[in-house]
Length: 165
Length: 155
Image 1: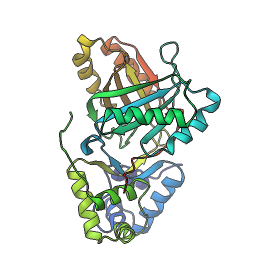
Image 2: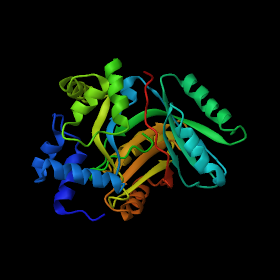
Image 3: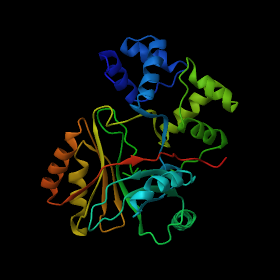
């Protein structure tokens, strides 16, 4: 999708977050020279074109007491990755799930999911539940708890990656 | 750096967060619409979102752009950092503006960070510069497919 100069300006303005006023689209539009209706139409098109993946809030787990942040990595047979990724996503405690390339020989894992919990033991139990429910008992996996968060911000160029948060 | 805020959410806060993770209405008065769904006045919805942003519970309220479709690059990368060099390497990596998140993790691959660049080629370039600056191999693991979910609170 080709963006006009005004649409690009809107992408940048939106990147800073939605104004907290009763008519946020009118307010955004004023900043970039679009009407309220045009602003809404552009955002709708960005969503339809998939340039906006999701439009809403980003929760910071740590501040809510979700201190046990685990990246769980699995060596799933390639033919089943799609199916397992979808099944993982149905669990309330899974917050992100991605397929990524293996990096053999040290890194055989191709499916990554994030599990955030208040207690380490609970998270480990939930990982066990994932494995059992999805028939992955024999599948190699590792649980990488985070020990420190050095940096968390929306990236530059008004992109806001959530990956591996 | 880690903030030790011990934040709590009440029932209305949780309802708002749950309602807004899936999306935000594209109508003239979206906060009013969210409020009517949840049985809350518009002003209260706005005020609660503002407070959660101020408290750092929400990092952002807006769009998650699809970096690749916007013409940018995005990847997850890892380093195997010798324990005695950890602080030094963390400082080097964090100084790159392309690094969005960086987490220490319990594993042989013990530093995990997200790179976001203005162009797809920027990823390889940044990986090369991080390898040169640290003398370590960067394991680049770009996303192949995403199965999105989101954090949901029990009501």
